[in-house]
Image (cartoon, rainbow, N blue to C red; front, side, top):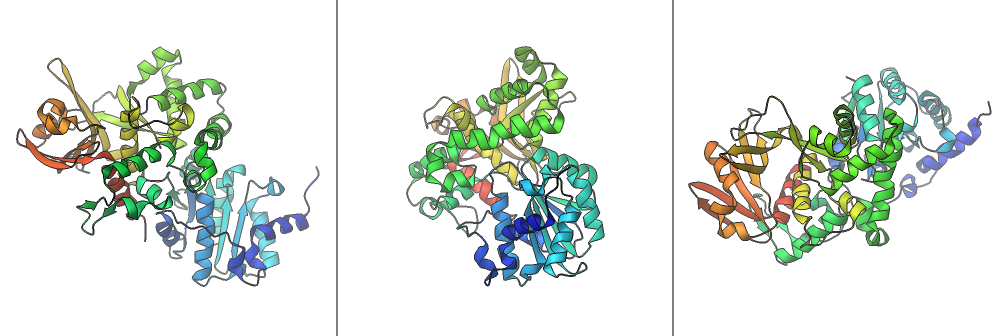
Length: 477
């Protein structure tokens, strides 16, 4: 079998690592005007030499993983790490095809002059393109205790599964989700002009009014989950082509089929299209099976694959008392970011019939940035012949309700809460210790007491901003 010479491999590695030869090591690193809110927390973890673990940076395609790795290298240089001790390589480069990680590391050591036992930063980008990568990385993690290995990749389903199976005790997973609404405003350069959260985080200012913020909120719903689409004017004009081809198609048509051996790709694609079109709808395996003609166990596996790939997430149902059902028949399915729907079916406007479900998707997707996603539910129960519901219920670790939130894109219920918020009021009365009872609106903000229940009303755009801001600040240093 023909092989690629070590000389050509080294030449490619030198291009990947310009700081080895540049007079100014930082000159060869691309400069980016913005950092993800996660950058500080990731850097703190990756440069913590007291933890003998490799870091696996994972997330959906096009959320800025490679950019954050370049920014991380620049920060490492600023902290005094020698350029010759930093090794970066993108495994999807054709010249590295099939080369074990150990061989790449050997070439690095032989040509950098660094000592094997010294402290080094070794970064493998797009690592999922190497077969059995987790076995290779596990061996290196044990063999080089003073080297910090960092791996990243876009085939998040593969990374998550194999990291859990083979990297227990040796790998630390770090998830990079799509942009929050607050990050979107920061990346678009409009945050300070449109909204600010006061120091006590209990009040906000809207310098240009709620309508200006709502316009930005609709933009976020349509294009706002992916940094490149936000900062690149050309991609903003055709987000469907960018997101459809680079984010959705590659996962559905390449990543998931190759990982799980899916034979009927069109079947998986149809399921995702239905979910995307009805993001936030309550569904069941029985309903999916009846409408599609696909077996329930097959649909269940597909949902697991889509969730592992960070394309969707599921929220389970509880009853009026905040208790889970013994047999979980119904659940809600949301897109991990609402802009995927716009990429598939076209952008939505403020008056579009689909906007209600996408506003709900946008707000609840902010919780992907929290560590308590499993505490998120929706409530639905029978009250006589009527079904009552609360869109979002967050439980304390003690399984008692902490937050009850009804999400709406209208102001009508502010003047008629008793008629429009029956489910929210009934739930709060049944759970009097609920810390916060709230309803979102389109533009109005107020506080009211209805039937003995204190209800906070806040615009959906404000709620989305504050929720994402609070969660992402937990990850920043």
